[in-house]
Image (cartoon, rainbow, N blue to C red; front, side, top):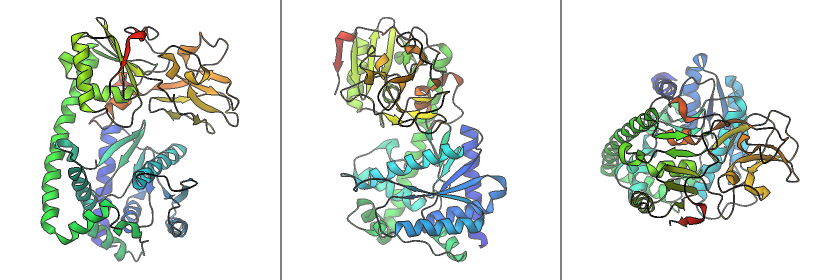
Length: 451
């Protein structure tokens, strides 16, 4: 395998070390291996350091190409030769989803990998993105109008779920190095023609980068500057969150809510957009202009409550409370599974001490048509017929005799996601920890909507 594989192995080891520094020990590592040259290089690197880590392999079969099943079988055979466990994770869909197919496939891929990692007890998922991918990502973002730290590209590590970190060890290496290592090892990678299909914007940028070395250098300079800006921003943000927690200006409760002291926004430079997205279970932060309007209304004492990006924000002279909004569509139910803890609504890690019945599902209390605006969004476990089996501890007085769920509120984890350093302890309170969480701040009837 030569020096190329040694370079890849060193990069992989360094990435795992960084993940351990920031997020703790990694009991096992799940490799995402499609069978293409990049992911086979990841497999080779893992083979070099396998005595120091516990590895498993998964191949996501998106079912979008007739060759994908055979490619997954080839990876499985290679893993057998290496003595590594392998799973095929099929993306089940009746038809390719409408809209942005690449984005939908990416979301499905990470959801499937995260589920498999939980099953295996893995703390890390490793992917083989490389330096060429970084250039394309920068150019795509710039073409869509992104500026500043939003041009920083992919992270070498990022948080996927509580206790699960994604690492990308090859972001500083060119694709050619990965392909050379695979060739030297005598492996024949799969070739996905969609990577070169110029109907897709990323493929068009890939072609331009091949034809224009100056564009590649420009992308490297721009992304490097943006990455440094992001590091500085996130370092300031992590200090602000730690300081606010230490001073009692910021609190997280077991019902998935965030409480801010009246002076918290003014003194601590806390990121209101990040707090809203986390408490609301949203994929992304709300638009900056909407957050600015909300902040101005709070500062001016106008109104008492508002909803934004899936979150409900209420304020009074006593402080600010941010929680999940039930909304028009409620909260999407999730299958209970066969045991263990579930990552629910991007806000809770929950479980049930008893056996799960067939067809049982996690849902928000609002699915039962009960609860205050704050209580509707708390998790309950329902039988297939819709009857409650267990409830969040804060709902026990409404459902006497039903057992309480176990787990943690993870909104604080969401607030800390991707920030440097181990998260502060108060970020993930157990479900029963809450200080006057039943009492909403502000008047429910005064709620407004901020677009």
